[in-house]
Length: 184
Image 1 (cartoon, one colour):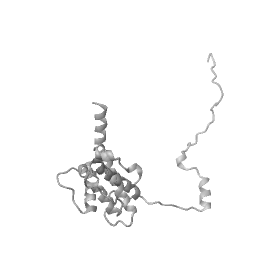
Image 2 (image 1 turned 30 degrees about the horizontal axis):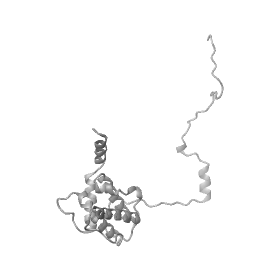
Image 3 (image 1 turned 90 degrees about the vertical axis):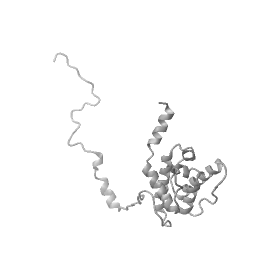
Image 4 (image 1 turned 45 degrees about the vertical axis):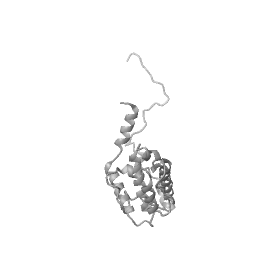
């Protein structure tokens, strides 16, 4: 098997059809419209129109101009505008797919992961009253300790440091040479 086929097989194995279906249902719910019947999930998303409509629903005005006609570059521009808008919305760069992942169908699993990251980000926007996708991100649980409590903690050796269970270094000869006694 060639290396290129091995890489393609590995990327394809990361794809989870249930997650694709869940992301599609979330998009349909947010937009209030179903995907065209008989078309694949990635084919519907490829031109970026639905993605731009999605971010405009979540944050109105994020993508002011959506290209509905034109060549490939116009459609790829939609995807790039969507990616810029979700970064501005708060999705981390590490969660964002690259345009070729969707356009050339190289890594649809990453596209779905980006949609899940966008769905999680909606939890952090109280102005969004619609449905969310994925688990709710954890909130910060900042704690403030007084100075006495902090000083008391410095005197303890935590269990993470381990224990020696009574072992000592008695009998170790660090730095001494090995003595070989002949005849014994």
